[in-house]
Amino acid sequence: MARYLLRRLNLFLATSLVLIGVLFIATSHFPVEQQYALTGIESPTTDQLALSRSEYRLDSNQFRQFIAYTKQRVSGNLGVSITSQKPVIDELSQVLPASFELAIVAGILAMSLGVPLGILASLSNNKITQHSIMAITLTGYSIPVFWLGLSLSLWFGVELGWLPISGRINLLYEIEPTTGFMLIDTLLSQSIYRSSAFLDAVQHIVLPAITLAVLPFTVVVRITRAAMLHIMNEPYIRAAEARGLHTGTIVLRHALPNALIPVLKNMGLMLGTFASYAMIVEVIFSWPGVGSWLVSGIYQRDYTVIQGGVLAVALIIIFFSIFIDVLHNAFNPITRKEIYAAN
Image (cartoon, rainbow, N blue to C red; front, side, top):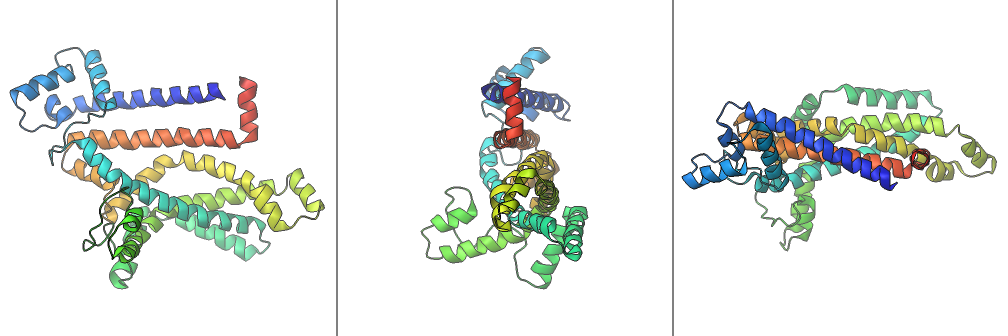
């Protein structure tokens, strides 16, 4: 297992190095002076010019420049935002928690609703129930996320007025950021209005979380159903039924843990799609996360924000993809046996 973890660490480092190389090449083709694209300093002084040329080795060959660029990015120096003239790393640290909060809530919704429906679709003998669930998942998978988001905003936000359609919380509530997760910060707040603030934060996250959860929800339902249909015909399940165990006990203790293994694997494979959907959702609902911040930087031609945002999103996707792959192999006895056999 140690060799397997070492190989995955090497994969993460190699992929990250390739990503930084792509960003370095793209930076050299930005339609501005390279020094300006790297640092974002609009009117640099003589000392700042000399420092940046020294840090990024702009007087050296391309290879030395790439090594210097990699060193600066790995150390956390992402330059200064051209628009706000603030360090990109500071802006990134402010918007990342909002994106994580939205993704976590959407993931919980997708799993908590998708797994039971997948089990129901596999165990039900009613053809109408089976076809209805599969029709719902197929419809949800086919709906464009931007149309779904705009439709939910129009129906529940504008026409009915039930839910807010932008932001994370009403500006009337002054919540001191502690963790960056608004749902947690409202509960940790010492304000006498923290209960109202928490309810308001929940109402703000409902529509974007539902919109983002639709795609993984449909995938979870279909994979859970397929896995349960396969597992329920396995010999050990038949043996459990022969011993007279209750169906609920068989499903929860024996079938479901094994059915969740392919669900975990496929969730890791769709992280890139999930991240792209999250960016669209953040823009639609004005959610102050990495996606809306990056799209705003693209519109404003903020080259340092573009580099920092792309680097952060890609590294997060790479890290969690490898992390989920490690979890999948740790919980999957068959894969674990193959790993030990290879070692």
